[in-house]
Image (cartoon, rainbow, N blue to C red; front, top):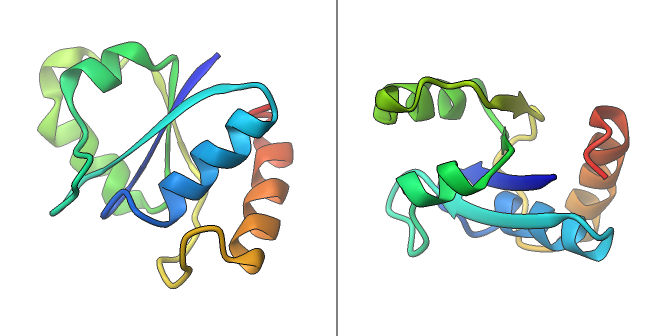
Length: 105
């Protein structure tokens, strides 16, 4: 399964999740919605089998911004707040629990 992790900036949560998933043998990529150096694109969405977001606002923004895609893909909201740094130990621990709960790897 190919998973695209999308957060607000594409710097901390999504990047950490993609790294963790890759370590578990999952094809993963990451992007951000706003002011991101690595923005969400049609090609990234097309590439993914499933998309992971971290807040409901992000799910709604993806669906609004990319309406023409039909949204036959799963969008999974992990509900992880935006106060972590990239690869912060507490974020890694939380995301590993979410990966197991959602059976992402």
